[in-house]
Length: 394
Image (tube, rainbow, N blue to C red; front, side, top):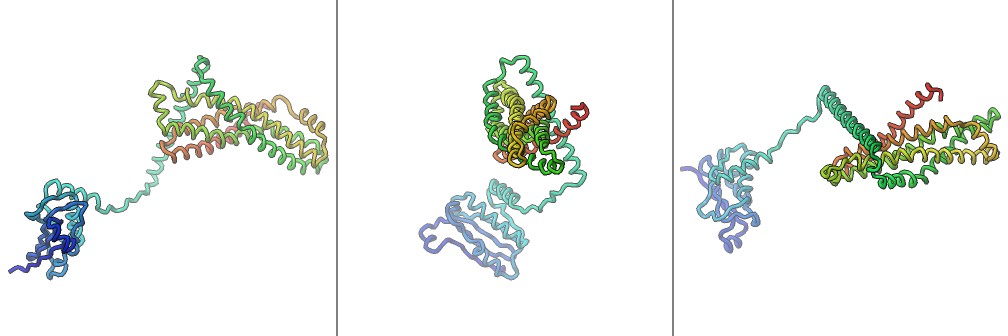
């Protein structure tokens, strides 16, 4: 006669007596088959029987069972996902002990859900996410082509927008342009003035050390004026606005993209480049030369202060030497650079904003990359201008 054992798991003796229809699980060992009978009311809000207690007979049996079959008792009144989870626990218990588990007595829908649950909870081996060397090269090449295509498209849209501005200037948003001029021009005067003044002071101090060795103190004015007018005025202004205005452009447009405002403009038939990009480009290109002139003046004033305090050069003599050293080509060189730097800063900030991800982190990355790209473009453009002006003899 086959060996058999029975054990019943309930919440407690008093609970079973008060609520005879609680969840019930009975395990009966029949040879190498362990029958698990489920009855009562199975609800998610009520406690379930303890699996280890139910299977105590199976754990102590010798030999242990080789099969487990789940059966539904006649007194089963109600079942929900609580019974499904208990059946899943039984299946996991059998898998750990490499025992066959049969839950075919459950309803078809419950069997299907149990299969999905087992698939979802199955441990997946970690994938090796390292790409092959050639795969990395291919992905980098594709990414480069996509970014180049995006930049070309953006530049083309900006050129067409400028053409529409030249053809119909009355339709241009001059109010937005003047607001941007105030933000990137007038509001930037304090920081541009401070940095330019300190740069003039530094250059005057460094030049004075060398000029004193040759008794040519007065030529400090020449060095400061030429460096500020041809190079440092436009360069420092560009660097300041790349960090201040370029990041602001990227963050503003990026927030609008995250809020789907750019999509709304396109839906209403308004070109986002005409509405958002062009006013900022025009404002920055117009204000950069003025800021560069302002930076030149403050740098010369800083050098004049050092010449008066350290070299005892009168301000009148310093000014006369500055006027003698500078000519129109020196000033125009700096203004051309400043205008170009302004366009590059505006393009980098607006492009990164238009291509920002639709999240707060994406907007932050767009602002950061706009600053880095803007400064990089300024350095590259300055090197190109140096070679070009040298070839032209300016």
